Length: 105
Picture (tube, rainbow, N blue to C red):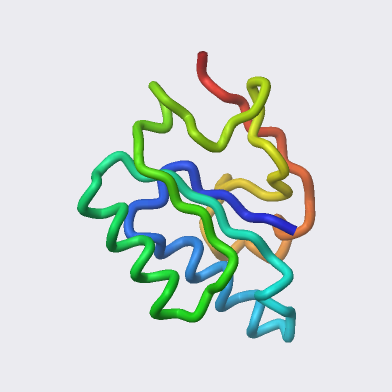
């Protein structure tokens, strides 16, 4: 399973997703976390945040998600099961489902 936050900032949403998975007795090591952040300074914070919360499988890229999406293959997010659509309160419903995620062109 994989989770993507295309505008991840410091990675708080991804960290909360991992926390929710662990709370439900899931294995965070079986999940891949993806994100992209435009600010190079905040991008570094996001990577540090993932390491500090012991989240091993992450790929956070630096760049503008609209102008240069780096988590996209053939116009759609590649290998992503869940993308940031709603606040984390709806995470339980979103994890493990395939959500349509339009990519601006």
